Length: 319
Image (tube, rainbow, N blue to C red; front, side):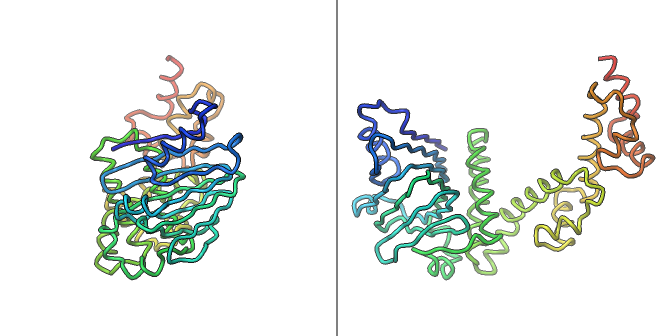
């Protein structure tokens, strides 16, 4: 597992362009040409795993050239570009010039020469490079997309959000954990490409479910204090059935309602332990945490922490 950061501002000003170009060419296999040598800025952060590469880039107006020599030196990967802000275009041999913007995904066959043009502002983007061998179960979907774009569907958003989370947390993961996450990204790629039924079922058993439960839990946290929080409402927001949502929690040995209650109890415990809430009644804290029934709250709280809410508050005052 390797993490690489390339920033133009880290190079000596007098030779910034040349040194930056040399490093970029050696690592990313492209020739980088800035529009304005005096004011250009560029930064790239790359996470390299055995079967996956994830990266973020932010560039002022410039051009990235993948020459025939670079293409011949590139592994057999497919790179998926997801623009974040600004504007850019890409043109590869055998394809037309394509304008890239947020809301689109571009499939870049790495072994094909091409030109990627950043128009400044600056331009931000994220990319994921997957070995082609892992995409064999989605050949039809992949071939229909190479050197072209696809809309950022819910399936592509799951892929994109999970890959960005992996990129952000890679330095905090053990190598085996990071490689497991790489498999999840590969599975999500298959789903987004419309893989064969068998491949999709494999993905559903691993990466898709992992990404989905993560997204659902994050949704619950955002709406934790909303009194009407329900499995039906969360499922509707994520475009899945309530039955499937419940099965996600069942696969983790819990239920939707128990997960919500546990997170609300944890919130109430933090509020009771905070001296800034000393003037609030236990009932108001329970309601602020999303509970509508005080007696049920007291029972669940004592069962979870072995103490009544008033005892937790008393201990906090002593401390």
